[in-house]
Amino acid sequence: MPRDTATFQRPTGPLTLSDWRQAARAGASVSQLVRERVAQAVAGGDAVPDVAWILPPDAPAMQAHLAARLAELEALAAATPDRAALLARWPLFGAPFVVKDNIDVAGLPTTAACPAFAHTATRSATVVTKLLEAGAVLIGKSNLDQFATGLVGTRSPYGQPTSTWSADHVSGGSSSGSAVLVSRGTVPFALGTDTAGSGRVPAGFNHVVGLKPTPGRVSSAGVLPACRSLDCVSVFALTADDAAAVLAVIEGADAADHYSRYTPGMAGWNHALRIGVPASPLLDAAQGGPAAWAAAEELARQLGATLVPIDFGPLHAVARLLYDGPWVAERHTVVQALLDTQPEALDATVAAVIAQARGFSATDTFRAMYQLKAAQAELASLWQQVDLLMVPTSPRHPTRAEVAAEPVAANAALGAYTNFVNFLGWSALSLPVTTTATGLPFSATFIGQADADVALARFGARWQAAAAQPMGATGVAFAPPAEALPKPACEPMLTLAVVGAHLQGLPLNGQLLERGALLQEATTTAARYRLYALPGTTPRKPGLQRVASGGAAIAVELWAMPQRHLGSFLALIPPPLGLGSLELADGRQVHGFLCEADALEGAADISHHGGWRAYLASH
Image (tube, rainbow, N blue to C red; front, side, top):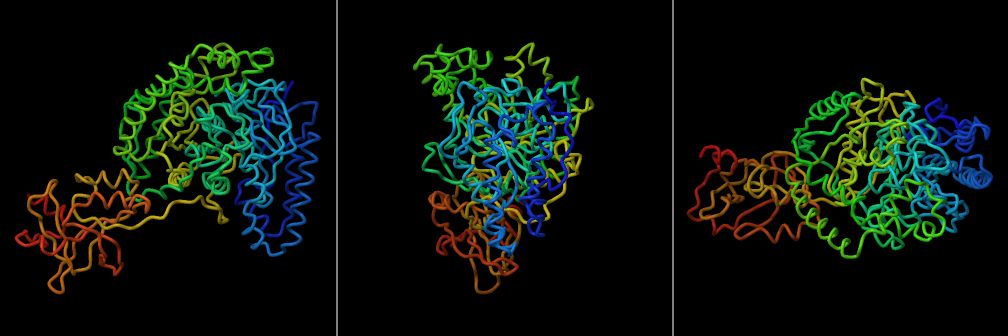
């Protein structure tokens, strides 16, 4: 009888990446701490196998790998006695982690939860190499829904992990073991993969953070594909700060991954957020879902957000393409030979799902691609209405018995708010909210546009602090990191002062929003400017001019514009307007809108209003 994943107690020692860095900085032997953690993780022995693992730390191949790695770290520590220098060079020094067993590690087997498919990897996935180069310590490989096909965590011949909060309920999949091992506190972070929600649903069912990057931000080289055009490597962690630190290490372009598309992206939002929520959320009343969702909405409001009800019908239509459309053929490309020659080697449900690929033609594929392209174009305008989407990570949390009775239907229900995200190229972050009246963990997933990963992570840190939930199943309350952690990259921004039709809520503000510009603050210029209402402009625009004397302070908004979009923005500015240097009331110099002097002849001087918005209000 396998050990149930819900029966484990929190291990002693460091929990978060901040804890591990603190221990290293204080001079502790991180190698000894890792050995202690491994001993705790395998305390049950072979007589009671732990279904969270496929390759546990005490497996012979893993023991040899781990011994070599710890000896390497001990040599590095001896050669670098300055612990600050050690952590600067190897920011994850000594921190243990696990990877889902569809991710290659050189010299170790990759099974994808299918023994007949197992093979020894000759080189490590790019993400694994980057983590090792940052000083982290791989201690094992985790269980998954076979070939990463499922959101339930029950489709594996190596056993069925359960939620760390309930032995009767599924762990979620396909990254089942990774989420469970983080929730227990065995490791501070783990890697999973996410095609349809496999980096988010298990996080929600185990009360941990699940970070799903923008597709292409993190390399998938060395990761066995599920749907190669959609797959993402995901991060499970106890905190959003830890997840962001791991992202900082593993992100970046990779020539070995033909789907690599790395853009640092936006830094964050400096204005009150507009968060889109389902107008009619799908929730299980019997499990206490509506009350838990109400708690999520209230917490969002406490953080200053305005909630905007959204019709999710178009998003659900996109989600249905994943399993009802020809993308299932991408899974078939991976297992076709095995399915044709040894169908009994596959989990019966996995085989049935993938076998659907045989029913689609090339014509069907192109029709579906056209449908997706149209939806992508239509839904891009959503980001002019909201900054983020907030959804229940899953409508409900099924039991193992429910999944066994209806394996396909139960699985399909879990993807209602996850399946569409990678199709649309968006980013997402699953965060704990509360526990339901029935004692189950409940989480919300925040979805951002492409390249909003850093902004999401920063918001996630604020959310966790406000939610004040325990970290996973450890029973330990969330606390902000005491150690500085690596930060993922965000793109260079240019501060731009706008004075007229580009102000928030006015007709041309969309030109800023569609370029990812972020509102920083409302302020005024130095008292050295005059403001004029320009005649004959559509939409109506003002002109700002610096004067030698008799000037006034004029209201402006400061927006942070991604520098890569500046050229396209400049192309939209018609004469007589242009960008120049503006002096603010506090003496700062920024770029902002100015007007050519000869265009102001005959224009009405409206400086006494103090700004364009006040002038419009007066009319």
